Every structure is written in C-alpha cells, then in structure tokens.
Length: 188
Ligand code: 5GP
Image (cartoon, rainbow, N blue to C red; front, side, top):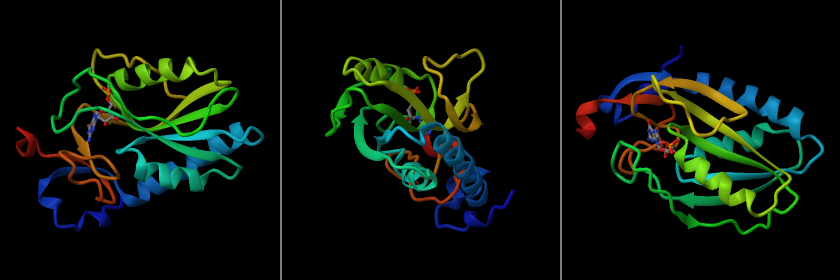
C-alpha cells in the first residue's frame, strides 16, 4: 500500500492507515466501471447521504461514464459519539421526485445498516423503479448482519472506528485524503 497521504497535521490521532489515496482511487475506478455497465441507459438519480458520503460521492459520480442526476439527503446518525444510536431522522429531503426512477444511494460506510434500512423503506414508498446501494465501506462486525445488502461495495473494513475521506469524528478528519483507524484514546 502507498501511504504518502499520511503526512498531515492530524496524523498523530490515526492508529493506522487502512486505505491510501492510491487504494481509494483504484476502488473508485472499479466501482465506476460497475455502475457504468449497469446504468448505461437509465439516467439514474445518485443520492448522496450527507455529510460523510460527499467526498466519495464527488469521486464516484465522475467515475461513472453515463448520464446521471444527483440529489442529496441528510439523516441523523452518530452525532459526536462513536457508536450507533439507532435513532434515524430525515434532516434534509430530496428536491427531486423519484417515481419511476432508478436510484443509487451513495453511502460512506455501512455498519448496522439501520440508517439505510430506514431510508430505503421511506424512498420505496415514493414509487421508484429500483433502489440500489453503493457503499464505499462495509464494516465487518463479528456476529452482526447488516440490515441491508449493498450491490456495490468499495472495501470491507474491520470493526474499528474509521475516519478520513469524508468520514468524521465530531466533525473532524473529514478532509484526510486517506482512510484510517482513529486511536481509541481520541474518543474514549
Ligand atoms: P449504521 O446505521 O449502518 O449502523 O451506521 C451508518 C452510519 O454511521 C454511517 O453513515 C456513518 O455516518 C456512521 N458510522 C458507522 N461506522 C463509522 C465509523 O467507523 N466511522 C465513522 N466516522 N462513522 C461511522
């Protein structure tokens, strides 16, 4: 792995780097090819789940080589705690009607899947033609089965709290160009 991107001011809070800039670029390229193949003729609506997915979203939509539209939703998630609350609220809804549309939900990381499960049920009630998930990361937690299954997955990560490439802890670290494991002493 290429870890050049590690030289930033907050490097001391990162326990180890899981995905370098180069790793991320090749993941985005591969997912872009998969999505291009599947959505070539359907003018899909790509929905970014704010705020964690925005960095991945900006990259993935440029890696898809077919017409698409974009919109944004915000749901409540962890806040400043490093643990799922199970409480999901829509903070910002779509501007676009989705009836009859092919939808691709772009998410930063799937952990329990509670957030997306709720969101998908909500979106299904609006009559889209299809809904699929493109998750940059899936967290592998022993004994846990995610409530939803993403069709497109960037990488699997171990059961640790990860930051960077859009993912935050307490609104920090989103601008790290790589994905790393946060030192537990930072949030404990
Ligand atoms: P789920 O509902 O799947 O348990 O949680 C999904 C959301 O929790 C993600 O969109 C993300 O906002 C947050 N999350 C889960 N695991 C992590 C993690 O390791 N790091 C960060 N920064 N956020 C996480």
